[in-house]
Each structure stands twice: as structure tokens, then as C-alpha cells.
Amino acid sequence: MTTDPFSRLRIEYETTGLEPEDLPADPIDAFGEWLDAAAEAGVAEPNVMHLATVDADGAPSVRAVLIKDLDAGVVFFSNYASRKGRALAVDPRAAARLRAIPSVRGSFAPTHQSATVTRPKSSSSSGSRFRLPSTRSI
Image (cartoon, rainbow, N blue to C red; front, side):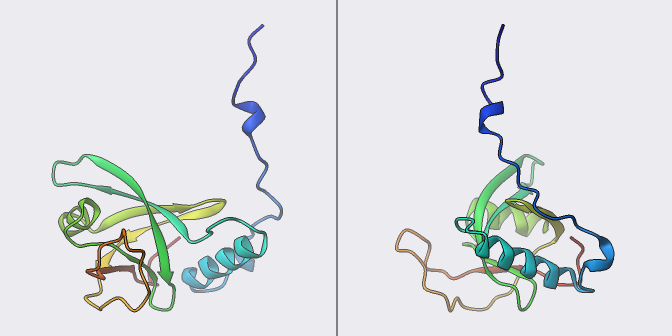
């Protein structure tokens, strides 16, 4: 008899339910609460977001980015000339997902603001920023 080699890897993430009436009016506020709860629960790098885009030919791509700010919507840094930067220039619609947090969809737009957060040496120094305005739905 064959056993499922992946069943032993399964972790139960649900600790509480999610009721619509318990959510803040602004979905970005809800997102911030979930990030705070994940950090308090000891989730490693709770601000890692997997971003899915499509390029000019419609080919999908997913990569990890770090959320840097939630004050003006979901903000992450990327080089505008990178693959994801070029994909967002062609089609700003994207989907994003964090571990154990509902996904977010919408149109990400360049903010054209310089980066104010220290970046790793391996990162591009261009300081390009993208944001999903808080008027979008989660």
C-alpha cells in the first residue's frame, strides 16, 4: 500500500474563523491586522508576498516580493526594468498571496517615489515602488 508522502507535511493553519461583519471597512486595514497577527504568531517573514503577473505574451509568472508599507495601499519595491516591473507596465493587474492570509487582487501602479527603506546589497538600487491602492478588494 502506498502512503501519501505529502500528508505528513500538512500543517493546520486555521486558528480562528473569519466573519465578514468582523472585518474593517477598508480591506487594507484587514490586511494589516492579518500581517500583525502572523508576526505575533511567529510566522517567519510575514511580509513575504507571492506576486503573480502576466507578460506581454500572456505568460504567467510568480515571484516573491516583500511588502514595505500599507499606509498608501500594499507597497512593494521592484526594479521597473525587472521581469515583474516590465510585466506590470504591460498589464498592471496582478494577484498576490501571503501565507495563511486571503489573497489580494487589483491593479498595481508605480508610485514614482524614491525608496526610503534600506535594501540588501543584492537588490537593485533603483528604489522602484509599486502599490495596490486601498480601494481594491481583498
